[in-house]
Amino acid sequence: CLRRLSLGIDPHSESSSDQWELGRTSVTLPDSRALRALRDLRLHAGRIVVGAIDLPELRRAEITSCALRKDQLGEIARANWPELVELEIAFGDPQLGATGGVAELAPLLAARGVPELRQLHLRNCAFADELVEVLTPEAGDVSLEGTGIPDAARAERAMTGEAPERGRELGAT
Image (tube, rainbow, N blue to C red; front, side, top):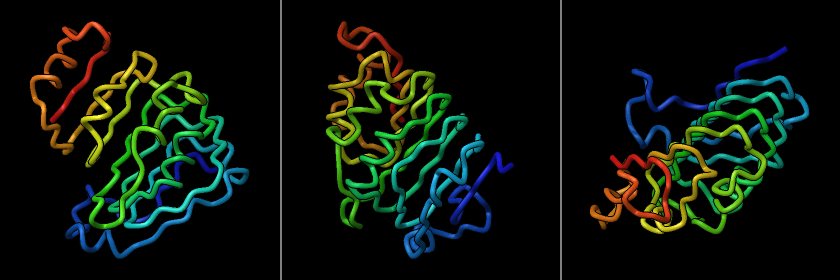
């Protein structure tokens, strides 16, 4: 049975020349009933299409898009992947069509459907400033990369745990 699935152009590989190349691609996640034993999922494309996600054995997921849409973000956040330990999402640029925000991520941030989640990596997130305001300990360790959080002092307080409402580690790079 299939344990690892990678679809699209991996932006970290040497053969991926630039964002333009990724932006011209599209990936559709197959019906999750056919992937029940999957443990590692990587989707990399300018446009990513997912339906209801039910992957009970998945441990790691990496989703990279130039323009992740609100509806797709909602499906990712509502997914049932009870064994998921690490999740990485690259949202993309609103100028390229990325939509959605904290409201769509709410189930994920509350750890609904992901009770084992320990590492949440959110990259290229235009709404990172709002995320810092709502992070809770349930979401595990969170890193925000390439987000351009405008209030560095608030991010630093969250990283060091000095903000009493955080109670977690937050890395902003």
